[in-house]
Length: 237
Image (cartoon, rainbow, N blue to C red):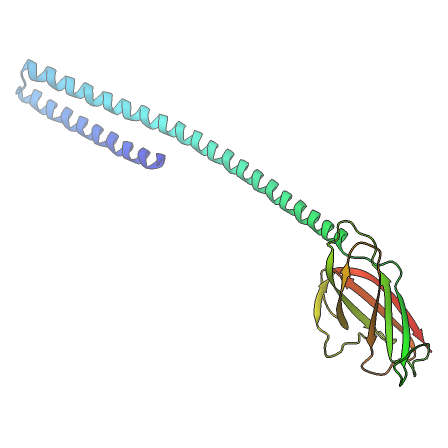
């Protein structure tokens, strides 16, 4: 620690100066009493000269350390600036990667062409008839095709349906739950899965209304892979 060395050298310098003053005082007293021989006086002068040399050296050492401290502080600040810059670049790259991943995920999500929604009644013999009246409708059929997408994963994809009644309310059955799409947590009316092979295949999904159909327009919104897939509607008289 350069700061600690400064303190240590300062104490040594003070000790050297104290010793020098004490030695000089002793010499003055001895000279006044005439107790020193010429040889002893010469030896004392050499001691004092040596002490002064040490004091000068300590002072020079302190100056060197101070300069080193300034250099170290500058290097530390430059290093901190460099680290901050690298950290900022890393954060930018991470953000760009996240944005790219989001774009890739969005591009890989399944999309539909036209979505057709039709209403049906089921007769006693099990035969289905297309209807346009709310009073006779028992279920709706959502027909759609998945747009060809070379980067979409082939295989099973979960499909979520949200059915909105003519009053604008989401129809939620006992089997309905939550899912995430377009960065929102939503409730779904019905969930199923389709096999995607990137071959333009058409799909038909039936949904039976647990309640009675009302007059007006029913809107069906489809979701897949965390994004809106498409939507369609049917109007009942």
